[in-house]
Length: 246
Ligand SMILES: *[C@@H]1O[C@H](CO)[C@@H](O)[C@H](O)[C@H]1NC(C)=O
Ligand SMILES: *[C@@H]1O[C@H](CO)[C@@H](O)[C@H](O)[C@H]1NC(C)=O
Image (cartoon, rainbow, N blue to C red; front, top):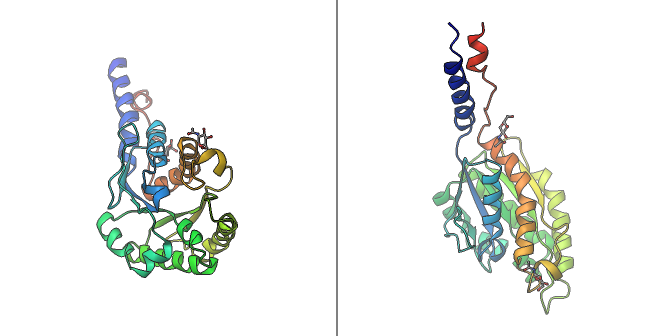
């Protein structure tokens, strides 16, 4: 006899279990400065967006604890307030951080403080190159998402925004030359649509409006990287009810 109730139960359990079995936990490290870490509530919004999209095979990692953003989220990160990309290289800090957090994906948003310090674009890009090399020493298949950083207009730095524009342009040219099949680099545009007048209170750091924009710019590229890094092996298994009809 065809047992309809039993076949329905099998079909339901197969469809519920399969996505859970499909994807491994992916370790994600947000690497940056105060825009990322102090408090960097765009990461909380981003985590929330992943939950809403039912992407739960993530572990956000880093040597810094998350700060309060009004709700519980997975907040570890390496957003070190005031740090320069060139400073992190000079002080050889990244290898130690990575050896603790062991990420599969690094979301790098650096350069703001370098630009603020009036460093040449090429010097900043050379630092990004070194940081990517150090990421690959930690994990040869590291997936790297690198931001075109947000615009800036702090008081007393009238040429800062042009520095950001120059850096972002250079990053777009640099990324494909540094990207490899084993360790791809994707550029994430967090510049376009971000307005220092309405998305920050100080010309630099995102307010709630800016945080929403940062979460949005990262979401789709991060989702794609998670699917690739986690090995999205979700496959369509013939349902039990289909089988039982044979
Ligand atoms: C963001 O900051 C700007 C400038 O201070 C302000 O006009 C705007 O209301 C703020 N938006 C939010 C959502 O905090
Ligand atoms: C994995 O693939 C399935 C089927 O194509 C899709 O529905 C799901 O959204 C994917 N998961 C992620 C994390 O991309």
